[in-house]
Image (cartoon, rainbow, N blue to C red):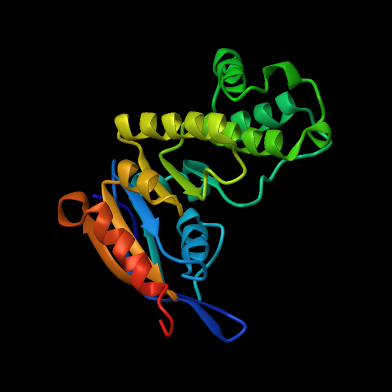
Length: 234
């Protein structure tokens, strides 16, 4: 069953196409890794999938279990390039706000565990404005994981994290995979993206070049696709 399905979806910015009539189905319980060079339309695609951007053409169809309660965004956890934090609130207030927004209850233990895991528990009473950029990114990541959403969408989730926290992030995404959470991840880290994915999509200049399962494509072929696209004149 498809959790999200795109039918001929396109997006135009200032007369320039960012996505070109994309057909794509996201199956329940699978992890989709999206690859492609800069400017391929990946971020635009993820925002449309998350329901925070409308396409210029085509249809986005959500499964009944996502849409039965109205706004599908309440079933989707989205981590984009921006941290989307409230700088005047404390670390704990930011986390509590998201926890309640997604309708979760009795979260004291979950919140403490998550903040400790990302090295933020000792800063829980500090306003976000006092955090370093690295800490803000870790808080944005932690905020996404406490939602227990039906779908998780990550746009370059390892960006802004040093090696230690990158490993923590990778472990958390592996847990989502083990739990069969529907997950969509876009990353320029090819090895990590290939390890995590069940299905792989490759975009270039707004077009979906291919959609293949793990047994249909290897990491070396994906690397070769990138190499060919980097050649002059491509």
